[in-house]
Structure formats: structure tokens, C-alpha cells
Length: 392
Image (tube, rainbow, N blue to C red; front, top):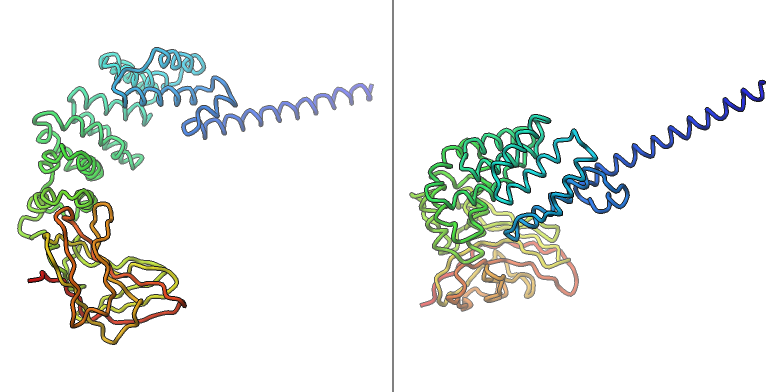
């Protein structure tokens, strides 16, 4: 009997261990599936056919692809959502995925009902709230939309950038900028994201200009937008923006400035990139101290310029002579990063080099580059003066 009982005990021990192992494997599969469902839904479905989160991810991807092509989702997407709903009947995901499909099909009333039901199941679900904001914008209920996004931004952060394209679409309607501007003023992350998005399409420039306001020079959107416009060669739009945000300050860029004298945040100030190849350190009212380690070609200093077309003379002076092949001046066209001219630094004193800016290069960048010699060695030098003047 003991033997028989021991056998039953062994069976239960091994059976219990097997059950625990199976549960552990299942839990591992659930954890893996959840972690990968959004990023690799097809791989998850190969591991676990019918896993709801992966089915939802695939459905959303197909809805997004259809939206980008300007068409409603295919009937197969609806079937996919229904299949996922069968696997998770109490989950809110089928409702908001179905709502996304109805939104792209233009059935806003059905989408509204589905989203309200999803939010009742899970009031804090970010996806349902985000879609509700998107739907509200499409329906012209901007205050509702911005309220949803502001709440999500406070909870999660990083939401505004994803919502900006929907708001940009709304802003293309007549009078929309005046309606949106007051609400954007209370949500700086969303305002920055919207204004950056408006810079992408040149046709949106009037809306960008309408939303810009005095004092925006230090706002998060301003420098990236101006740099984007300059890279496209759209200098006149940059001038208009500057007059809007800083009406009492000229744009600058039409001549070289002296390092350390520019106002804070000036996009046309000298920049000194941080690099392992060397460094440049400006001194107040004094020379630019240069260190180059000679191991790799290194940009030590650079400045953006808006030189009008024509001939110019570049001259410099170092506190002490520098060996040939140590430093080089390069003038490049910002659009396309095209080289306009290259001139050895330290070789221009007394006989300034002549270079020509062409009409197809409205924005330029002058760089001081440390060169690589035959033998790597550290070079220290003080640049006292550099000038770039219109040739007569």
C-alpha cells in the first residue's frame, strides 16, 4: 500500500510539476506576445494564432495603410477585428479598432458610438482617448480634442507630436487658425509639434505665420522650423517669420560676426561643434583658441550666412604662423551641402582669396576645418581675425 500510495504521490508530484511548467510556459508566451504584439504582430501570430493584441495591431496597421492611400479599410479588416473580439469579448480594443475603421470610412456617427463604448469599458485607455480626440477634430469640436490631448500629455508625455498632423489638416479650413490659437497657447508641447508640422509643406506657411507670435524666438518650434526653411532656401519666409516673432531685431547673416558678440539663440552666430577631433574656444574680445589633434578631419567652427550673390574676399590672421595643410576654410551651400570654395587658413593675410556666391545658393555655411596631416600631431593656434567682405 505504501508502494501504491507512493506511486500516486509521485504521479501527483510529477503531474503538479508538469502543470506548473505548462503554466509557466503559457505565462511566458503571454508575456512575450504582449511585449511584441505591437512591434511584431505577424511574428506573434506565428507563435500564437489568434492572439487578440496582435490581431488588433495588424488591423490598425491596415487601417493606417488605407488612410495613407486615401481609401476606406477593406472588409477583411472588419473581419479581423471581429475575430479578435471573439478572442477577447470584454476588451475595449475591438471597439476602438472598429471605431478607427469607421472614421477612415467617413462614418463619424458610428465611430463616436464605438469610442464611447470603449471608453466606458476602460476610461483611461490612451488609444481610445487619442482616437476620440482625432474624431473630435474631424467633427470640428476642437476644444474637446485639445482637452483630450492635454490630459494624455500630462499622463503619458510625448503624445502631442502624434496628434499634430490631424490638427494641421483641420487648420487648412478657413478661420481654423483663429479658433485653435487660444487653446494651443495653453499646451506648449502641442503648439510646438503643430508649428513644426506646418513647416513641412510650403503651402501651409500662411497658417504657420498666423500662429507665430512675438517672443517665439525661444519657443521650441522656432529654431527647427527656421533651419528647415533655410535648408530649403526659403529665405523670404524666414524673414517674414523673424519680423513676426522679433519685429525689432534684424535677421542677420549678411556678414560675419565676431565670436562671442551675438545674442543668445542667434541662428547666425558662430557655432563650435563638440568633437573628439579637436575644439575651438572663443575668448571675450580676444582670439579663437584652436586645438586639433590631427587624427581626423574636424569642423572646429562654423557660421550660417545669407550673403547676396556676388564676389567676396576671405581673409584671416593668426597670432602666429600655422603650417600649411593644418586648417582650411570651406564655404558650402546649405541646400545640398554643395562646396562653393575651399581656401587654406592662415595663407590669406595680405592677399585675400576671391570666392563667388551664385544666385542658386541663398544660404551658405562657412566652416573652419582641421585637416589630417601625414603624421597625426596636436596643433594649438589662436585665430585673431577672419573677415569676408564684398569684393569691389
